[in-house]
Length: 111
Length: 116
Image 1: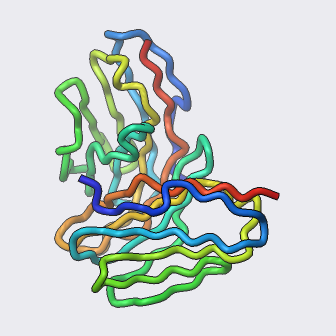
Image 2: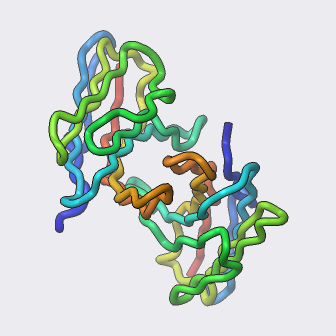
């Protein structure tokens, strides 16, 4: 079963707007990671947030983690057409050494 | 480093044929993961190796699938005989497992398999 589930499934915005994607998961985690996948390519790691962290920034990316609600959000500020991709959250559940990926949010940024 | 290398990038075969997918890990990584991605099921973990040893193969669909890691830097995923429902993009990823925490996974470009 899916550990992480992203919401929304698809998001369409204009360049310059902010994009927010959410991820919910079911069990306790060690960390949560966000990945990006451009069409026809492999996944690329964006950011990792540990279970004892609440917020993390990397460039135009901001990730929050609420372990009490078992949820995370990824915010992309001032989006660009090049941000068009699918975004996945992945959880490293406590006691397991593998990542479980959600089905992703497909983001379309129009010029 | 060239990153994770997968070959072939595309494979078209007929039902019943044997298919072998190949993956070269990033130097220094000790964990390897094979995934399958389809529109219907998303990204599924097939098998996971740590230090060349298969740790979790519960995601391997059935006996037609087998994976090996003959050395620390190379792995193969074999499907024999292949079926049309095996059509998907197959990714391998490598990582460095430190203690109980899984570090970032680095994905290869994938092999797009089409079984006719």
